[in-house]
View 1 (cartoon, each protein chain N blue to C red):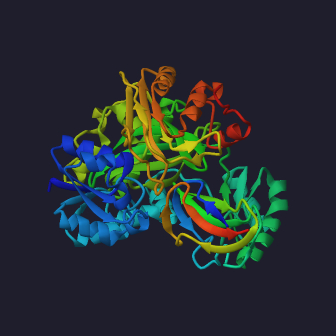
View 2: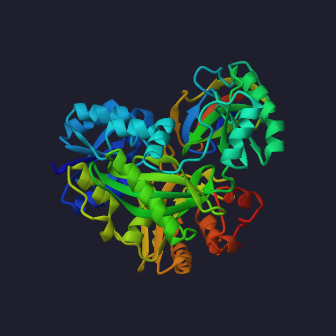
View 3: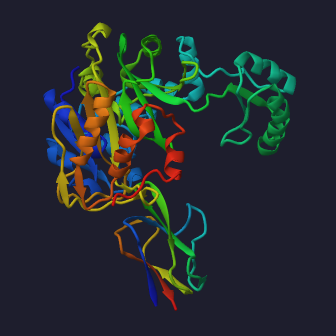
Length: 455
Length: 78
């Protein structure tokens, strides 16, 4: 049944984004908020608002009972979880189901299955999606390890079978290395876990992070091409692109087709993302995990394909069938998004919440700024530091980078420190402009002092 | 008497994790540079350090309470 009253169980820029999508579908919007968020932009824009608890997220945005109670009290027929918080919380989805309320996302069982790394890997393999090659089970002897490594190809990563936390992990470049390191790893694993069993996996060195956007309606599934998200600091994405300029057309097609196979195999409903490691040297890609939610960086895909993904996920959650066949979905030009965080990049990215004293936004063709700011707004310290996302779309990657520089120069958020200087420096960096980076690139670049204060 | 002030807004903690001992008890000696508290701001944790030496008197804020920048967190007797 089509959704008529939607509770938004999130905050910040994604709440604003969901309200925009819902309103253009004629849906009544109800914004849930903590006591600290009573004056946030989404509360002002929604048709109504409901307080779900104190500032601390554990007592509000992460409180299953409080959010379900708010949905019932406001007679919402559906809840959109955004990203983070309870977007991938199967217990929350089950509580909504019991209350007869639709969750905008996949079923609790799908969330459970894809949230379990082993189960997700098995589902991927069964659907023909390449996974990082590894030993079938635990290896007891060094000779066993050597024969398995010959099949996987070097370099190999040696892990403790009982492991976790990086203990016992070594990288062997050849058989001699492996013969020397495997006994050390066994001894370390035995000391740490009381179990000397080893596990081998192909080491993908300096990989790119590439992901595929999919959408399913429970029967059919389509992809909206890929994103390139290798620019990361402390495993947080900083700068995202659509598409991945490093892929040739045959690899792109194969990558996206495998993502659709997995989505169909699990009867996926809603928006989802399959994440892969990509080895530029061998042009191989390997599935690592699936995110069963709309992601922060979804706007680059929207700019590339012209589809409103948030509207589409609300449509299928309400029981609708996909409105686009794969042939209808095309890509044009190149899109880039940067995350503007309330952090001081010159001071080890120290969080810098405060009051927005002035706000000047860039405008023009191909420029979009998803945010939740207004002049006088007090950014609360209780949540993550994302203030907004600046997205640009150009005819090709060079044009998009040039437009990103223009857009960044036109963006002024007074009263706060933001990561704008980082993005300007990246947009001017020769390696970034040459698309020559990977997931291990940004942190050494920062450590080497490439980000300099502007005079 | 010296007050320890919060350098940033956020959530204040008097111990490094639930179940861990308090950073300081009343009567404890405090050296400049000692950690006397922890603040969570935008999912980042920042140690609060004493700028003066003396004897710890008391916390002025409950563990887990929301605080503003510049809020008095604890008192140290000179």
